[in-house]
Image (tube, rainbow, N blue to C red; front, side):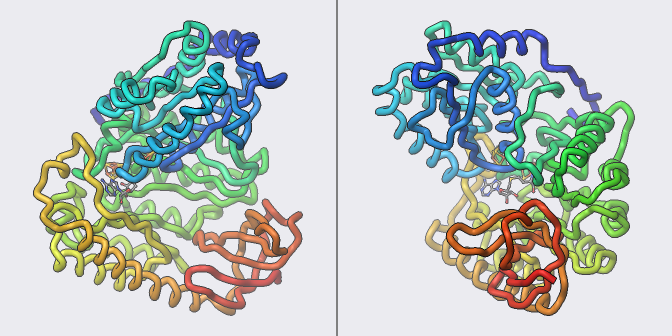
Length: 470
Ligand code: SAH
Ligand code: SF4
Ligand code: F3S
């Protein structure tokens, strides 16, 4: 558990040999000079970061990439298990590949990620989707080349899942999706066991990467032009607890922040139970740390928070938030909320509404509770109907819409530093984000994509800002 020291290994040479071997298999490129891979990622940034490693390994194995599933030789869905809806989409999309596989039997169809670490799901895939040739869970990522090789040459389905060796594997090649926005995992897994959540079961025990490895990866990213770097972990605030040389998240953040360059540093997710004043002070004093704090509170009711096993109450949450607001001018707060946890009453839900009114978040990620097999909450009495929960959910959205609109309107007339991210299709409008992660639309040339610009905010439309270059 968390008092054990982390163990770090490098991905083995054997895996690089498998990448070489795959690059020599001619049968996998029947439809072109180079085999093409189609990778679709569901779920959170942790999965996105894992997919970047998978793409790194595929690239070294001779693959190119395609956005068109119909021309792919290798199709992979990296799955998410956090809510039923995410799982249903995977089943629907995998089912739709049946006819493609019939037409081109040489295609390899694979599934990986969080869903695959659940036994009942892997069994269902095995029985109901015989055209899926490779399945591997989150713990098997470092042996992907070997698994892919075996599935390609042995003519047998390969299923590798269910074994957490509690190690961290470094040295896996990465092919990042973006050239100026990037993810930097600082830890894996979760030990918190919130009663509704599947993540600890599918991602295994919490383990932190060595500080020096993270620092050198951050330096490398900054040197190669990354402007917006997000440190990732299920609970970044408990970073370093199981490292031999103990180091706090605030200390790590300070050290990365001291690297020279023009960039923003973000992080997610912060768990309120471990959010220290030291961390808030570090953000306040930071040179590069964004003025955005994503601090999920899940419910405004102390009774429900206890049932959720969250280890903080409303009072403690508000204390941190108020301290942060006082120390960090212009702070943008966001949160995750679950509506309709088992046994939640309308009175409990009203506590959530009153909390969002009090804090005034810039935006919220809101979810209706979804029972997950194997979690304690799935066994709790859940008397409120889904229709009723949906009604509460819509009430929450309406309240938040007003709050967000008010917050955005208060920014009109200010000048904000904005990272220009993309150009809208068909119009000349650019999209960017403020340090607080609020979307800004403005006119401008697409050469500006990937640069910081000062933008005068001229209008606010709900939660989106409009501006002009200043
Ligand atoms: N580690 C992060 C969250 C990871 S999951 C944290 O602790 O904040 C992202 C969000 O999904 C959670 O914050 C929660 O709001 C939501 N979520 C998790 N399990 C859920 C479930 N069973 N039903 C509905 N929403 C859920
Ligand atoms: Fe899930 Fe809680 Fe861990 Fe977040 S902290 S991943 S909600 S168990
Ligand atoms: Fe989903 Fe796994 Fe992330 S369950 S939310 S992809 S850690």
